[in-house]
Length: 381
Image (cartoon, rainbow, N blue to C red; front, side, top):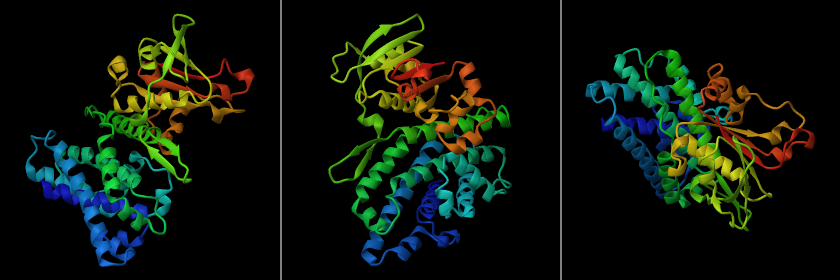
């Protein structure tokens, strides 16, 4: 099983590198990442170092594939499991992920998955029913791995490989961290195509939202911007609590942390919350923290009842002079392709069934005749 998983790891890394470099040479199925490195890097010593780094990434992905397959599809014969994993690897090879235009299309895992499937329409024709189910489980995971690898590699430009060599240990550590932080796949219950398609969409939505919101940018004196996971750097707000009515509380964010209540404790006990405070007190950061925690289903104990909810971020600054959004518009703020891929009426159903968290940011950025009060809102539906 490991050899099949390693071949998949090789294909995933090659796909990520093909997108990163945008090099037509990668369209040849016989081409390897080593070939890509040798074409771009002079000096055998540096070539060998890079080859080892990419090999470590391939092995890390293979280990993860074997790890979750050891817990799933245990009743499937070994040869069928291998055939399904190899079929995924072959799908990536056939997809020819080298187009820079594709890379610039604001990729999300579901868009990438559909692109790969379209490039290999007969990938599962020789697989049995359970093996097809395994293929359908491994392919979206592999697409998430491609996206994580892409986000880990330095921006591709002149000297990108040299930068990769300088940052090799940091890059590998960041990749492992990103792979660990990918939200788990939504369970596909096998009740029908529509249910499975919706589960695939929810998985892609959670993963895209978590990746895009879990970023904290720090601007240093060297004019370079450092990016860190927001959920690791997040410091809890302390707030003052004022109840306006039975359903809505007003929280006052305090810059000097003299408030008497941690914000997680306040949020845990209210259905609708309005957070007020001066600029720079962390209101937007809190919104994104809530969104990422919801995507990963790992809220702290005080808010554990929120696990399983689906977050929607609504930046009101984008609606100055425009009509305010309907629920169907919420998905667009997470990813433009996601909005096209969403099952019809999905956001409305999520809210109607009480499974959503609506994070409304920047009420104070609307004209006065359209706002109720300055600050940001947070509520579960």
